[in-house]
Length: 201
Image 1 (cartoon, one colour):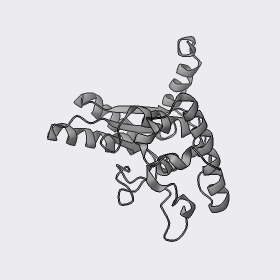
Image 2 (tube, helix red, strand yellow):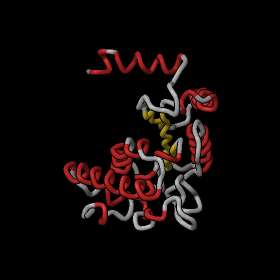
Image 3 (cartoon, one colour):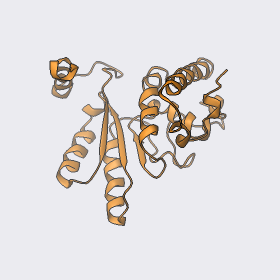
Image 4 (cartoon, one colour):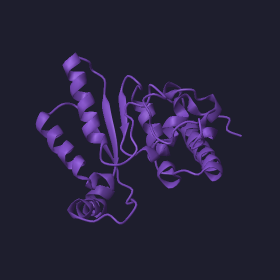
């Protein structure tokens, strides 16, 4: 039922796929997530929204040497499935099963244990500074949604990261979705960027 997905054991396998195969894998991942969540419950929409993002990250970076920090755990189902937990995914949200969020004790690919929002940039910044102190060269990537970006810890982390100047990649998953409507200056600013002709080009 999932011929391509069943061949993926880790992120390095994703690098070997053609663009057409990546499109097929994205479709299989969505169906796989829907099948499991319809039986076990879980966070459906946020995970369906990060399928292509996850595949793009795996196509470019080398995990777990590079560090990937998800801001909210319920964006990470594709990540969990593609990092050796596909066969255990049916145990999601079941006693003794895999967790619904990244968990450092569950996988070397989970760089940071996370449940809720606005912590990814500060955690990733700490990892980047530790990398620099050790003289290492790996990449550190934080993925944060537009809703989580409005949290105070995110602003503090961005301010600190900009001042320190260390190499850190922050990906904004600007999907206009959060538990409630986004409000405030940052939300309005992102809306203006999205609607600008330059952005469309």
